[in-house]
Amino acid sequence: MSQRPCLCLGAALFFLGLLVLPISTSLEAGEPNAITAVEAESGWVSLFDGESPRGWRGYRKDAFPTQGWNIEDGWLQVMASGGGGDIVTIDQYDDFELELEWKAPEGANSGVMYLANENNGASYFSAPEYQIFGDADPTSTGNTSAGSLYALFSPMNKKLNSAGEVNHTRIVHCAGNVEHWLNGVLVCRANIGSVDWNQRVAASKFAAWSDFGTVKKGHIVLQEHGHDVWFRSIRIREIPTTERWRFGHFEQLFNGHNMDGWSAYLNSDGKMDDVWSVADGIISCKGKPAGYIYTNHQYQDFILEVDWRWDPVTKKGGNSGVLFRQVGEHKVWPKSIEAQLMAGSAGDFWCIGEFPMQTDPERTRGRNTKHLMKNERDNGEWNHYEIHCIGGNVVLMVNGKVLNTATNCAEVPGPICLQSEGAPIQFRRIRLFPMPSSSHGATGQ
Image (cartoon, rainbow, N blue to C red; front, side, top):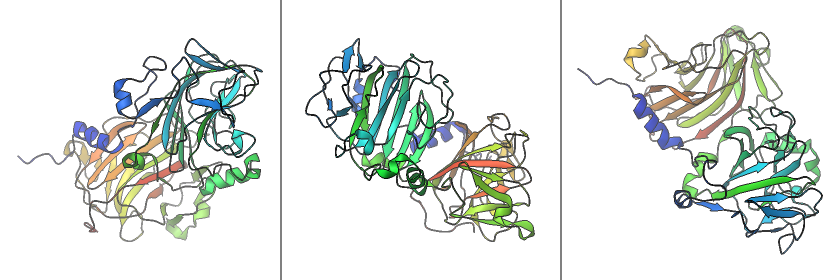
């Protein structure tokens, strides 16, 4: 009996772990302000010991403020109307992971800024800010609510605890790429210096400040904004050069404003603008005529992330897909691997044009390989795809779960394609991490 030509789930998870093993597990569970030996070995350093202001000083000051800040019961408190001003780390950081816990009464305002210099009258003239706020509505998505990149990027899918309760924040910066996390959920992404970033800054108050968003290495700042806010378990990990690909150098395939970087192939001589439109950072597809948009660049080995949802008004599902390693002529449908998006079937594979690949024969019927389980949200809600395509191996993840794997896939470069296949569908947050290719040939074209 021949060996089954599939990548078992255990092997898939091992393979996936080698590629995207999280750099940090949550540090929320340990003792407050403590760094374990394992964490220290991984590079974590405490920025607050729970007892002293060591490692901090006032913004543009030589010492820690003598008023407005208090340390008690393991918390570093900025005091209402205390007049202590912002505090900054003595050290500066470029690529890092920063974690901390905080609590704020309803309406209390503060922030954590990063990449700050001291060339200006205030830290916010140079530094992007993770907003700390005691939101009255814990689901608020305003761009000045908790978790936002203040006044520029709004948080999404956030889980804020009630005002006065402890929240956990994680900030990642690597090579200009920024992530804001709140209570274990990624709520905000940005790419400093990108087209999207520059357009947002130009339309904001930050446009008047020449240093804003230009600092490559700078201080971490805790903001004094006239309200009582508490901080603890403040720790940082500098990202080694060998790990920076995990966080940095991703490409935003969709800039949030227009279809730059994309072309279209549609039946009936259709035009892109007749089917695809952009508004509020979302790409909307009418679904007819059949066809697809495709990136003008080609990719072979990568990790692709994309959010999608069906019409949020009608809440009707339909059919679509993400095609990759597409080769040969443009047509409906081109030779490629399809990560299925059909409602109820997200995570299926479709092998188009006899594209060379191997999947689990027990779940394969003809060109289709069914997913391991259903993990989609209700129609009209956002879902998240991760497609890991490295060498001959492909892993499909939907909303954080591995749903399908393939091996011995032809290693060829091709565009990323999003289908128009009969029903309205929307996409957002499309980004790709290019990976070094393990082959130089064009097998399977």
